[in-house]
Image 1: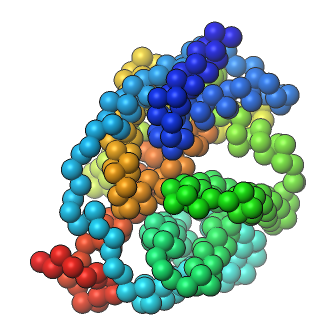
Image 2: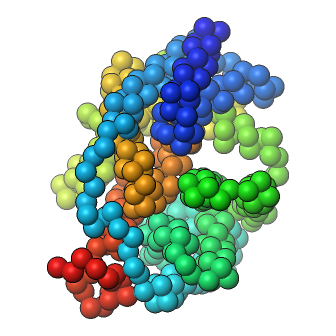
Length: 396
């Protein structure tokens, strides 16, 4: 098929000129190339993809790469404070993180016992089945969101190895209890980038990481629904890796349709939600739910955002701008800046899982929280209650 061949050529070309697997353009091309080849060569029983889908994927990647290459090679100025590693009071910071993780775990275990449901997936199941999310679930979600980059910031310090293992183990347990496979996958991706960045990756450790990832997926699948889930990893591959492709193909070919939304309803979704809080306006909703391909799925790849907000032609302009933003972001990582390296590691799952869903714009508030808390750590706090976050040097 012509567009699969073009996709392979584009991927080889980008990999050749950049020679860096973590460059956003390389990730985007490689991910899409691997996924569509696997889809076409694996006997999975899902709906056949149309020529229009492959054409759309190719031009999405092409315009993304053009945008990314325009900005990733530039050397933008970096804030002087953010260019230095903060000298955190590791002891007090470590105690704070352990305390927050412990509180979250206690909330989950107590809440699960009271409600009579599995602690694995408690936060997810309560959130899905409640019209108003309970306060305790909001607390766990907020803590998990807030501390994500800080966990990896502390793992990059000279803390004792035993403390690092204990801290990471608690965080991993909390992530498994969340019942979200994508959250566990995000941890795996972040670790993989940071280890590769420091050139400390070993085959044995990589095998251990994969084993932990598979084990976490197994536990989540087995226990998330009070033990009523069936363990079928082949089916998991269909649903979690392949099914968004034929779902978006249905939309492209007008076999399903999205509800009309205001301009950039998804990209600017955060601002529409803020307006809804203050002015009672409607929150944009595409109205797309589960479709059968033939397995049920309600995710449509990242291309859904551009397609719903700007139409098929407009989505390529969106892809160009999206690529420019990622290239701009990555330009700071290339300058060996640890602040941006940390954020890039934490957000990298957005790029790698783009064939599955859009993990950026619908969850933009989460990324804003994480950016601000990381900046807060890097900047000297003037509030005495947070004195443990102070670092030495560059006094005002």
